[in-house]
Length: 161
Image (cartoon, rainbow, N blue to C red; front, side, top):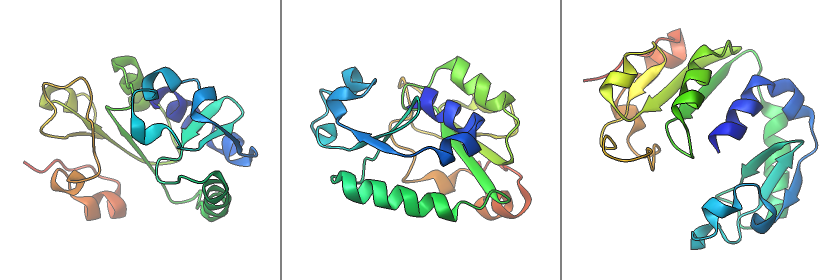
């Protein structure tokens, strides 16, 4: 969820050093949001101190934990990209907090309206969700809206029209 993600990236080294504990969805702080979603009923929830991570693509807690531990070892702290979106209960305050964060890497954030995208150079207008509360899925067409190669190579977010 947005609040946990912001906490996680604000103190990345600390959280990456924590041992991942697995809890059930019912024990999760955000259970009230997930209880109606049948796809979330068996999703492992990882806990790093006070941050929860939903392992959406892993139905098995052992696989989720092993994958997490393997990926933590591969984090290249000298080449980080922080991606955020106006989703997962993100608020305007969360968005403002992300914009203000001084992070050790490149930042990009998808927002649901063109006006908001003008607030900062890291924001990209993700079309199709203007009338929704949140961007419900930012994984299908994200590369339509900005020059990915320019962002990765130069750290410049260039909105495509």
